[in-house]
Length: 193
Ligand SMILES: [Zn+2]
Image (cartoon, rainbow, N blue to C red):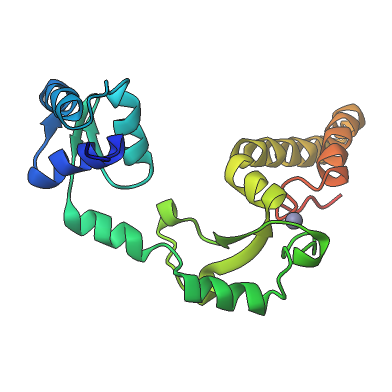
C-alpha cells in the first residue's frame, strides 16, 4: 500500500491545480476517494488538514472554504524562514542564551530563533532580524500581543490621571502596571512613573 500522508494528498491536488481558487467540495470529494483507493483508509476531517496547511503558509485562503495554491507565494514564504546555517550563526552570536532572561543550553533550556520583526509584518530571514529566545519568552512574544494593548492603555490612563491630579486612579493604574513589571511582561513598553 502507498504510504502517502493526508497532507501530501491534499498538496498533490493543489499542486495539480496551481493558481486556481479551489472550492471546498471539489477537493474534499477527490481527496476522500483517492486516499481510500491508495491507502485503504478513511481520511477524517480534511477541513482541519487544509486549515493547517494554510496556517503553515502552503495555501492561501481566498474566502471561507476557498483556498488557492501559488508556487511563487510558497517559495517567498520559505525564503522568510531562517535556514540551518543562519540559525547556527544567530545562536552563536547570542552565546546560546535567551536574549531576555539569559538562560541557555547550559541550563537545559530549549532555544528558538525568532524573527524580531515578525514574518507577517514583513520581517525577513536576515541575521540582523534574528534573536535567540527560550521557549517561555518565545511563547510570550507570540501570544502577549493583547497584554501589550492593555499595558499601553493603563499607561495612558495613568498619565491622564496625573495631569488632573486624580491620585486614586493613578494608584489603581500603578498597581496594575507593577504587576506587569513584577512578572516581566511586555518589558519593551516603558512606563515612566
Ligand atoms: Zn527567556
